[in-house]
Length: 236
Image 1 (cartoon, rainbow, N blue to C red):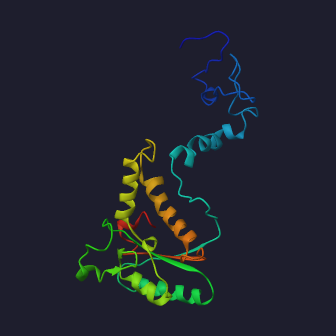
Image 2: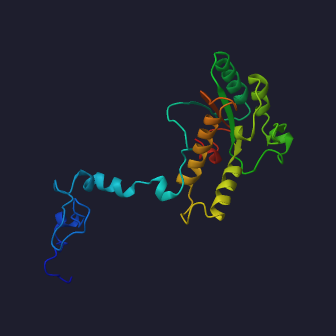
């Protein structure tokens, strides 16, 4: 190792030197030769040592990922979420149960907004075999979706839109379309944070939209299928 005069050189045989590093001075200027902060010393600060140092280096921000799952104007804690999941068998009546509970809350004066999230890769339910999946329900805006949306509309007496229905295929399609248009500015698009963040973003946007007139107090999230379906992992 070349030794430069006037500049501190780490002793690689000394474990204490392995965690020492050269950092900017407190005023933000560059280090002078031979001046350094020790990550274990008070001058280095707690954020520069141990888990604090690792946390500061591993922190992911929306500014670095060029994507935020938090819609503009969303207030954390303003909305409540009720998630309805199936057990080991599908078709047991999750939609009827969720819409019935939502109806009771609506009768108490709360604004409710349901959403059905499907794990399959189809963009919508329009091309599904009705003998396998059931009748296709068409919303006022033309969205072809699961028949549970019809149950929600009848029991809640409110018109639903494409915001109240999504599939894994639609989520992936939207993400890949953004990637092709350079929205992520060269970042590697991954399951976390982009896909899982997209799920959160859709739920939060629905919460802000509510029933179309007021933000929702309670959002009912029905996940199609069962908790054992691998394709539902990104929702759960």
